[in-house]
Structure formats: structure tokens, C-alpha cells
Image 1 (cartoon, rainbow, N blue to C red):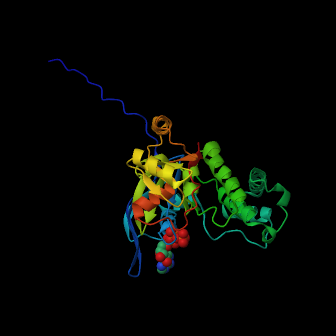
Image 2 (cartoon, rainbow, N blue to C red; image 1 turned 90 degrees about the horizontal axis):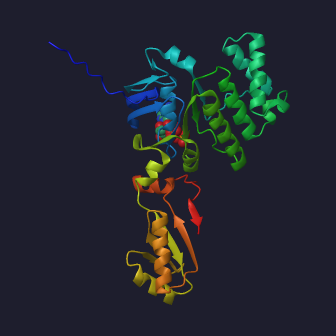
Image 3 (cartoon, rainbow, N blue to C red; image 1 turned 90 degrees about the vertical axis):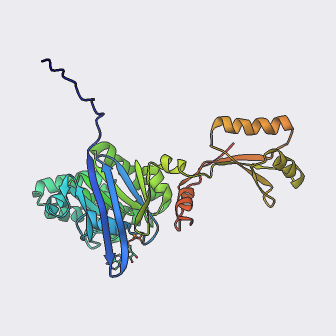
Length: 334
Ligand SMILES: Nc1ncnc2c1ncn2[C@@H]1O[C@H](COP(=O)(O)OP(=O)(O)OP(=O)(O)O)[C@@H](O)[C@H]1O
């Protein structure tokens, strides 16, 4: 008898999961806050949980960071079971919440040294880590100033630096830039990107800002009324929805009439003298529109290409505009 050995197909290497969850549920009284949340977040990635006020974002973070218990469901964080091995989970994670851990009466350095004590670092190691973090977060010059004198942006940076004292592998950032001015927000984004690129940590962030999720996240899940209503990369989410179009503006209503007759499927707006022509955003499609305008001799005043943004995603998925919709419009003037 001959035995033929067949080798199993070699699976492509997949990244390990930093966080997995199935069926997480949570109610407060008769208010259902989370209605069965499933998650699978790859190590070394940035995951954004996007949702409006009261959607359940903070509750999700509180469950996954062992601060509160879910009513049902299961989760593993950093390879450890959330409830059976809660201490191991806690030692692998850092949490920066909406309420800062910064003590206003202490200096930036003292705040960091206090965290070092809490993590049982010896004095010299604590001082070294505090110094490194102050340098990294551009806070060395204010190391000796009390936190009460800090701007919102400086306070957020110090808060995040304090989280890093414990050298976490997974960091939960609950609305890390809410209330910050655009410049401080961008600084925070750079810091978050750096944490993943330089240290290989996994970031779980919650945000109400569509643009923030779009800018930072490898994957985005949209939470609405306690349910995940969509999940994917920013591009995947944008592709799921219609809404791409080319908008052409004309000089007067006579030319608009002519153009509307030519582009049968377009929507016209008398007030702005524009025609909105459905488009997949491709160069070919744009060229076809321009060619039609040229060959028919219809003069256009201006033209913009609109590709769907996450605001459109929210509108399509929930039937409502995002309450805090601050996405930068992805429109390019041509
Ligand atoms: N301890 C609690 N007791 C009762 N209700 C709560 C409690 N914590 C949260 N909730 C309710 O659960 C819902 C979800 O709250 P959660 O803070 O998770 O939302 P969120 O998406 O983080 O909102 P926000 O962006 O405003 O922080 C809200 O309706 C909130 O009022």
C-alpha cells in the first residue's frame, strides 16, 4: 500500500487579534445600551468606534477595559479572557477617558511620577520614563509647571503620556480630541499614529468625528443605538453607499435647461444653477462628462467632483445626518 502525502494549503499569515468580542450586551435599568456587539481588532492597528452622543461608545470601552461588566457576551483582550483573567487584561491595557486622570495640583512631572509609583516602577526607572515621555510629548519645558496652567491640548497630551507609563500594548482612547482646537487635534493625531508606527501598540478609539476616523483608523465600526450598523475601512464604507456625483454650474437657467436635456439622469437645482450628475468618481466618468459638454457646445461655469464621505455613510445607514458631522468634505475643484 502506498501512502500519498498531501500537504495542506499554506494559509496566508494573518495578524493576531488584540481584541475579540462576541455578543456584548449591556442595559441600565430598562434602557438597552449595547445590543450584541461583535468585534475583531488586529494587533498593531487603529480601530475607531464611531457614533453620535449616547450611542454606547464609552460603555463599550468601559466593558473592554474591565471597568464595568457586560450583562452578556464574551471578550478577549490581549489574548486574555476579559472576566476570568481581568488582572492580566488590566496590566496589558491603558485607558484615557473623557475624564482626565491629570491632577491639577501636581506638576506634569509629578503626575507622571505618581503613575510610575502606581505601576511599581523603582524611582530611577520612573524618573527615566517620565523624562522620556515629557520629551516625546513636547512637554519638557513645562515639566515643572502645575497642570492647572495647561491648555486643553497640553492636558490631553499629559493624560496620554500618563497612560503610557505602564507601557500598555493596547490603548483605549475615549474621544481623545473632543473639545480640542484643530491644531491640537492634529498634534494628537500625529502622536496616535506614532504610537502604532513606533511602538506597535493597538489603538481602540472612540470618536464622534467622522474626519478623525477617516484620518486615523485602519478599520471603522459605526455604532448607532447600541448596534454596529457598519464595519470596514473608510474606503469600504464609502463604497457601500451611493452619493458620488459631478456637480456642474451654468451661467443661466437657459444653459441649465439645455444641459439637463442632455444629461437625462442628472438632478437640477434652479437656485444654484447646478446639475448634479451621478458619478463613480473615476477619471473615465469625469472625462465622459467633459467630452459631452464640449461636443454639445454647452458652456459650464465650474465643476466639482464629490466622492462620498463618512457623513454620507452615516446619512445612508441611519437615515439621519451625523449629529456631530464634522467630516472634511472630500470635494475637489476641477
Ligand atoms: N451608569 C449609567 N447609568 C445609567 N445610564 C447610563 C450609564 N452610563 C451610560 N448610560 C447611558 O447609556 C447610553 C450610552 O452612553 P455612553 O456614554 O456609552 O454613550 P457614548 O456613545 O459614549 O456617548 P458620548 O459621546 O456622549 O460620550 C446613554 O444613553 C447614557 O445615558
